[in-house]
Length: 512
View 1 (cartoon, one colour):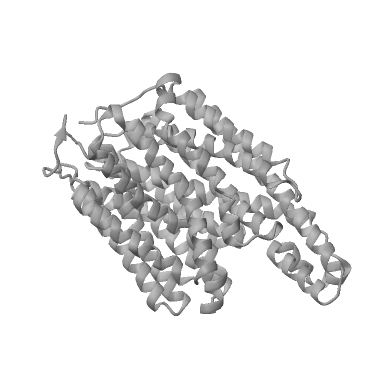
View 2 (view 1 turned 180 degrees about the vertical axis):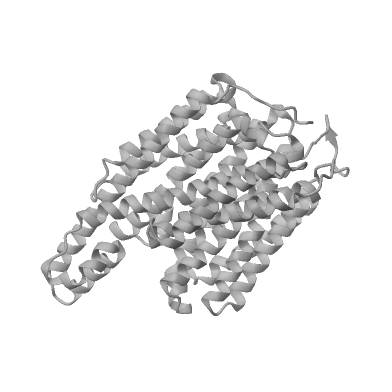
């Protein structure tokens, strides 16, 4: 691979530069997962998008990205990981530029976001699989730790970029900002990244590919739509039923086909399985927490999107050094102990957050963010290494895709379940003043609507508006505390599973 590069023991000497390009490409994908969240209010006004259309603008990216991950990882293994990376970046960049320049309806943006999701599904597995094949085993832990750090900080950076773009320009800047970064990544990748693929050229498992797309997309659809439609809604129940049937069919197909997309024997390795579970639960906590805090900072504390995003930065400041240096701790204390400690730190941070009130100082919140970041860094990096250590290099793309899919499913579950808990507590705690009883349903179902209505009442000289705003804020914080308790319990359960079941070291020969 990469004959143009000098090699050391079969690995390119510029591998740390390769990691830098992979990290940049990864951040592009993570940015696109969250930047548009901040721009939705502006976009909805400009394009006259209703709530359903806004939901699909967000969901089209997540569904296509999550649903096609396994297939795109397999295509990278089969036809070349560098090619998959470059094609994916071109798709994301072209769709971004087209949206910023030409989109004039919500349908245009939905189609563009779906295209970006498909491109991102080519990029993300390729980044980690390239890291796996260009680094020797003794450096892999460090390299994957840096990769995981970039995956962890991409979402907070995305909020910051989105907030800056909307406050200083307009919603189109959220898309324009991708273009120069992607052009740079494409040029650097063309020069620096070596070619690699499965040398055995196994045929692609078409049946497994189709079943994996149906299973992942229907599961994600049910998770994403559950909170808004209701968990007992017919469409949600059908999507979960389709997911279950597709997963069963996928497993049976993988066991009988000669060249499976995802060999089921991977799951016999507890390091692989527990690594995926730990990653999913870490992202469950992270995305649930970020979702709540953006609302908390903007609506409870009255900050702008950009100012709210800046206040997230203690989290990546804790996460980055912990993830990048986790390999040293693993060498000294063992992988299960480091991941367990990370999950316990996450739980501790969440339980400390239950002490937060409307008037709590930001610096107390920032200290909690640092603790959460440290815990997530110590969880994500060793868990990702556990997953990638358990697979042969020939399946690096598929292995990376399962890792990415676990992040996507965990994050979607975190937002769905965290949001549902928050809403349930909020609805039971908010007190509607007598003069607003005619709008009680809207106030109880929507915290932003309650704040807006309270402000309108005050503007009209109705002092009960202040009571409504105070009650809504208190109820929201109460709901946020409830969601933190749930997420903290999830982190503790994950810590117990890892400590109890994860092996110290189960590494397959990378030449298998």
